[in-house]
Image (cartoon, rainbow, N blue to C red):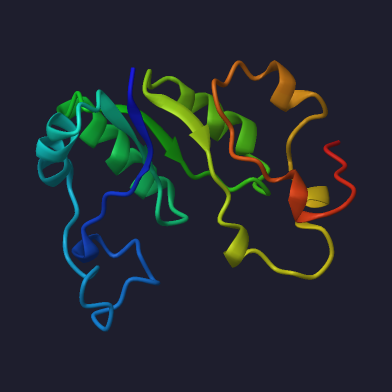
Length: 148
């Protein structure tokens, strides 16, 4: 199976993308599966994994909805607030969708004071027992990670 493992879709009018401004001429327009699907066929790709481009649960839900419509979206790597007290419950809700395959923290948006990974609301051993097929690496954000 040949898969594009990192594909972004967005619609600027949704308002999720604070970084996407009209000054970014080439990017400030919709990018949707309809545009990618002919290229996937041309290059004999079986599909893609949609990866979030905004730190919002709403965008993750939007990508999951797109995956329901477009079979070419084989999985979705979404966003959740790793520091939220409700993280485990939010993750359980997202995992109910069969195409939800992982999360990606927006490291560039996190405060650089201290080690943000030490503040995570993730129980010790969670990652190894989560059953995920893929989780974006975040451990390099600091030298010592305490997930307790």
